[in-house]
Image 1 (cartoon, helix red, strand yellow):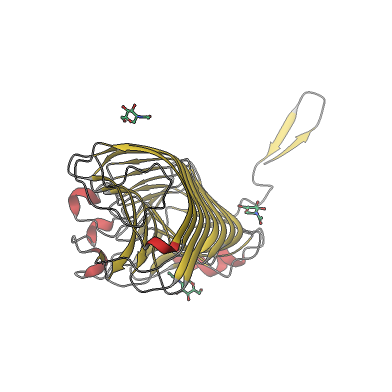
Image 2 (tube, protein in one colour; image 1 turned 90 degrees about the horizontal axis):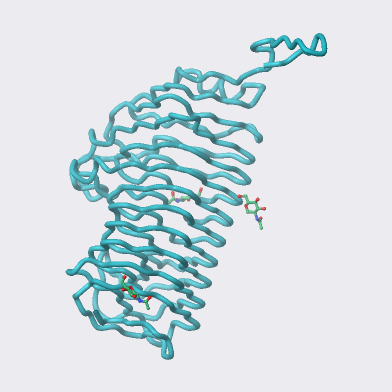
Length: 357
Ligand SMILES: *[C@@H]1O[C@H](CO)[C@@H](O)[C@H](O)[C@H]1NC(C)=O
Ligand SMILES: *[C@@H]1O[C@H](CO)[C@@H](O)[C@H](O)[C@H]1NC(C)=O
Ligand SMILES: *[C@@H]1O[C@H](CO)[C@@H](O)[C@H](O)[C@H]1NC(C)=O
């Protein structure tokens, strides 16, 4: 809209004089939208056909993508991504009331990625110098928001609502996964799901903050192995409610890699079912097994992590190779769990109530 001032008091507004973007409400016009000269794609009430990826890739640098209305997806059993975002200097913005309504219940069978119906992952994000803000994502078939090979990315105000999966067979519905990236900040988000709320398996300078996790498996580093490194990760000012775990670091038996410069700060736990805080060096296949093997975990800060574990759970479990962890700082108050498990490798001189009620 352009305002023309024709006298000192009267303004005339010319609607539509400024290009308002390419209105993408028909999937067949995706390529045309990407070439649109004003670099603005408005995705409104779009239906993405079954088995197709909404390929928001090969974008012109500087492109703005707006989501508005309700975006829906056809049903097919397949293992692709339903949405892919790739580019540099991109802004992805959810307008008020937007909904990516994925209707995952059509795939849910309680088996997640372990069998049953083949399920697509929702969104893969590979963006540099970009921002993704304000999306409402509902009921993904399994993993939701996967950040891979991104640099200088800000993810803000994403609401991942998969609470229907609690009763309808949602499984492996991971919220945010970040790997192979540098300088990714995820802030002000909400996740209600049935797997990790936020997980990272490699990368540096990652922040997850000011967010709330409900119902899932907590905030995870790992499982680590295959020589991968997680360094300079900060998780702060988060609430983790009714998850199976609060915060955890898991490294795989007999594998290499490193975890260093990790801070968990100002985290509230509530009604955690299994472990409030767990650091385990003996992952094997999908579960812990036997003695931990060497895996460096250096410069770990746990500061003001507090709250409650349910009666049947364990407040803190540390089970790591004694020689391979160093320079930890610890200040936590996790209580309520009555199950005592032995701890191993706890660095000396720290006030950690490990293996105790
Ligand atoms: C991340 O991207 C790289 C290259 O683009 C690819 O090889 C790798 O498989 C991806 N990882 C995941 C988890 O998608
Ligand atoms: C990290 O990414 C943000 C964008 O999210 C950018 O503003 C900032 O300059 C980046 N920092 C570095 C050190 O590159
Ligand atoms: C630890 O938390 C419990 C209950 O959550 C509280 O009663 C207690 O005062 C706290 N202790 C410290 C040292 O903050």
